[in-house]
Length: 248
Image (cartoon, rainbow, N blue to C red; front, top):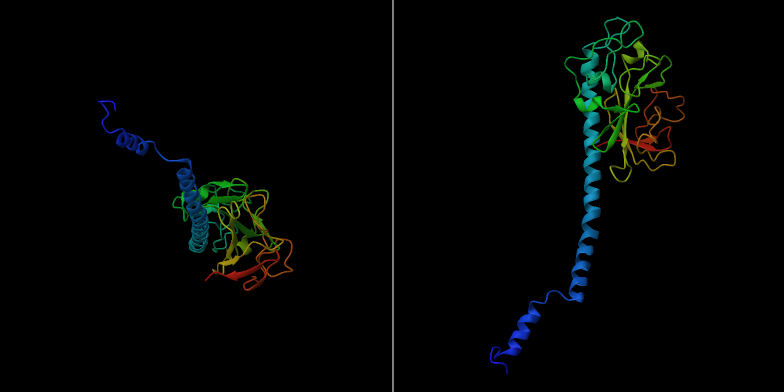
């Protein structure tokens, strides 16, 4: 026995303990992590989808109040009859000029907007907010929905009609990335009832700006031509083939 190492077996045991994890131990740790991840990640995604959908519903409910404030305050009155008209996101948020009485869009923007600045960021006629896209339609002379201009506000080449804009508007909300940022699609109009659809019918699957609801989607079929003054599909099938029901 070497005089400097009177207890070699104890030293070997100490070295063995300092050696680290074995391959089997590492595999067990990895397996445990994988099991935890397989449980946690779907739950996190589900929570995120639910949170985005709840926020989209809240946004539509806030829009009801904003539209009422905009209209009753006669912020836009293109036919000068003393009756205010409903607005687009660009107008409500103070991000664009307002419609004027001469068939143009030259009136100064709102000094005190009724919607926050996030609704000024309009892309392809829609606002991207909280994992959802939002788009407002106002009626033309025959009641068809006129979309917002691509970059916000009213499009001078495709203006809605004053008389019908005094009484009607509608807005859709759908996922920016279906099954990743949200699943359901939502709708609201001047009646103040938010409705929802599962967004899985053959004519639906709304996602991003490339697959958005048509103006008449949430109205009772056979509404066609973008007509937004008909009966709402509240509890029945809409023009898009999906069932729309009120949000509880």
